[in-house]
Length: 81
Image (cartoon, rainbow, N blue to C red; front, side, top):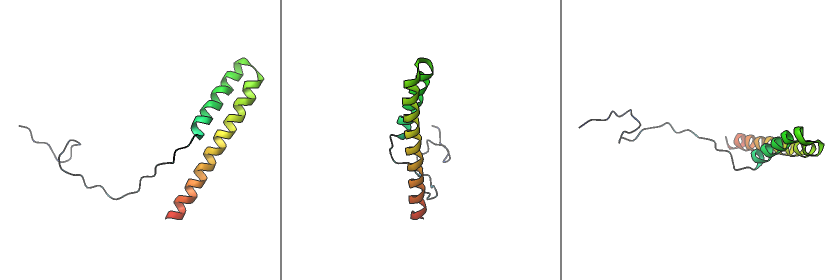
């Protein structure tokens, strides 16, 4: 029989962690819109002006909403502390 040390991840002993808050961002479509915009923008470099304009618009919307979400999250986090 082998004995397991209490500091291994497979220990049967509970591990006492300090109480800390782990921030998880709320779900958002902004990264998906940004990725789609950058993809369309890349295709536009090969296929013409219309995809470049559409990609630039989507990229701006995706980046803008992501930044706005982050600002709202930071303001909410500051108000909670």
